[in-house]
Each structure stands twice: as C-alpha cells, then as structure tokens.
Image (cartoon, rainbow, N blue to C red; front, side, top):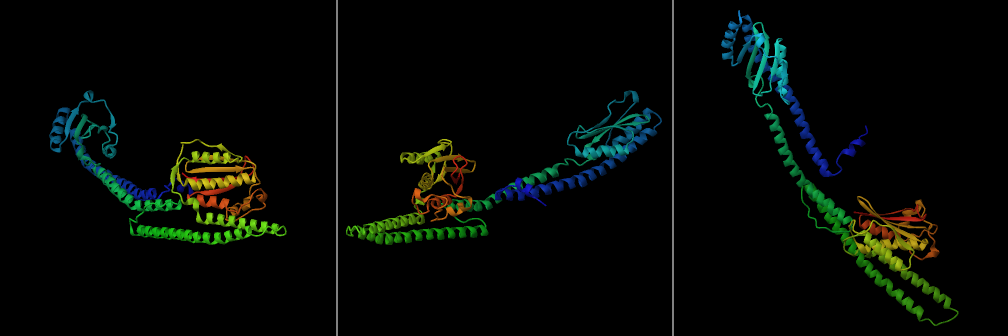
Length: 449
C-alpha cells in the first residue's frame, strides 16, 4: 500500500510528530470510552429507569380508565398519584390540551431513550415534553378523558449525566498539558543539539552543553568531541601549512635571486627567461594551493549583512576594474538579511566573475530571494562546461581544456573549488548549469536564509 499521501499531511519535525503520538491515543481513548459509556450506561440505565416509571404510569392509567365516571376517575387518580409522586390532572375531552408531539432540548441525548421507551409502552400517548429539564410532562388519552402527568426527570434518567464525560475530558486535557510540558523539556536538548550541529556546518561555533535524557547526552557529548577533533585538525593543518609556506617560499626566492644574478649572456638569455617563468608559475601554484588549503576566506567572523548591498558592491568594484560585468537583477537593499562571512562570499563571487569574464565576453550577476534560500547567479556567454564534466570542474586543480579556453587566462583550477568550499562552509552549495539567456555557464551560489 502507498502511504505517500499520509506523509504529506503529517508533521515533518520531531516536535510535531511526538505531539501527534501523544494526542492521538488520548483522543482515541476518549472517543471509544465516550461511545461505550453512552451506549451501555446512558441508554441502558435510562431505559431501565424509564421502564420502571412506565409501570406506575400504566397502573395509574388503567385505574383511571376502570372508574365508572369522570368524577370517580379523578378521585381514584388523585388517591393513587399522591403516593406515587405524580402530579395528576384528568381533563374531559373538550377541555384537553390540543398540543401534541414530543419535545426535548438540543443535546438531551437521554431524552431520546426516554421518549422511545414511553412510546413503546403507552400506545395512547399524545405528547412527551422534556423542555423543562427537571420535569417530565406526559399527555395520554384514557376512556375518561385526557390524562396529564408530571414527575421529576431524575426518575427516568440519571441526574447530571454529563458529569462523567466532563470529568474525563477535563482530566485528559490536564494530563495532555502536563505531558506536553514534559515532552517539550525532553525535546529541547535535541533541538539545541540540532541547532549547534547546523551552526557548526555553517562554520559557526555556538555554545552547547549536553542535557536531557541519557541518550541525548551521549549524542551531545559525541558531537562536542567530534567538533573539538575537527577544530584541532583544522588548526594543525593551518600550522603545518604555515611551515610549508615558509619552507617552499625560501628555495623559490633563492632560485629567483640566483637567476637574476646570472650574467646577461645572449646565448642563455632565452633559457634564463624560461626558467624565470617556471619559477613564477611554481610560486603562483604554491600561493594558490596554500590559499585553498589554508581556507583564508573563512577566517572572518560571521556577520548579519544585506546580500543585495554586498553583491552590488562587488559588481561595482569589478566594473571599476574595467571588467565587462553588470548587475542584471537584484530585489534591492533592505529586503532581507543573512548571516554569513562577507569576505568569504566576496571571494567566492569574485572568483566566479573572474572566470566568467576570462572565458566569455560579458558576465551578468543576479540575486534571487526564495522562502528558504538566497541564490546569487553569475552567467556568461562563454563556451560553458558540458553537463557530464560539471562535477569534475568543482574538484581542486581541475582544468577542463575542452570546456575553457586556456589561452584567455592562466589558472590552476581552484576558482570553482574555492567557491564550492566556501558555500559548503555556509551550509549552501554551488550549482553549475547552462545559461538560457547568454548561452554560456550559469553558476549559482545557493545560501540558506
């Protein structure tokens, strides 16, 4: 059986599902108990009490009908009604009340059983009036006239029959509230753990202390240990790369200095120039590798910024640098704010703009606001990247010669990988596609709001 439709209407969060698990059994038990109680207590008890009262009414009706005349019937009825606790009135047909039918108040469920039982035992019954609540009024035909009887409602049905249901509902609501508060306290540590893990995935470190049940505390302690281990590994990598930077730059500087001190010999001039280009290329490669591995872009602290204003500044800086880039679409500043590392986002966007203008003749930047995501789109009119090689293009030190013209600029294949790494650090992603408007590459920086 397919239950996909049920998944669409069920709560997606743990809090909602736990509340549903708590409420559904309570409501189901209340419904079952209410139905069983009404059927087996209200109906049966009410029917038994009404049948007992019916015997007294039949006795009184028979005695009145057996009397020789109206006066005797009134005397017999009055003498018999007093010990039975009935209000008795016998009227001659011309004086009889004309109102007929059964009357009860809305919501008087036991009144249905009372009326049905009386109708079955009294064929000559004219009307049953239960509208007074505390009194039952009957009108029935007898051989001597119309008999009007009145007696207390408590003689045919239990008094205040709703008290048990009200008590059951009240107690259930009270216990539900208590369970709700307890459930909230139990789920709060899980919610705090999820927030801490989500923040750490975005490169933020928030204060978290394990709390709650034993299993939640164990998960929280494991998360703290994992976070500390990752932070130590990052710090060790930075220290190691700092030493590598010093060790690599020193011999490169000696090589560059040695080449510059060689005598200017026309026969070796071309070879020396070629070696200098190799040294410069090696230095550039080392710098790019260190910048990527060190993750300098993630060193700044997260800030609450206006993304539209930041993108406009970056595009403006690119235009002042005489790059063919323009801001194609932006909702305008002041509409939304996100928490991010602005220097990192600037670096990622500048890398994408640099790639776009390097391999194309123009670049357009757009900002789109969604309910849960912010998208910064960079499009160009270059050759683009084939769909089957887009995942490969994001890997470090990947240079796709068939897709990108290497004669238009030099690089080491880290632009897209740096941008993707920055976005992953913010809990977002980098998506590559084809620009329908310009025909080149379409790069989307997706950031959570």
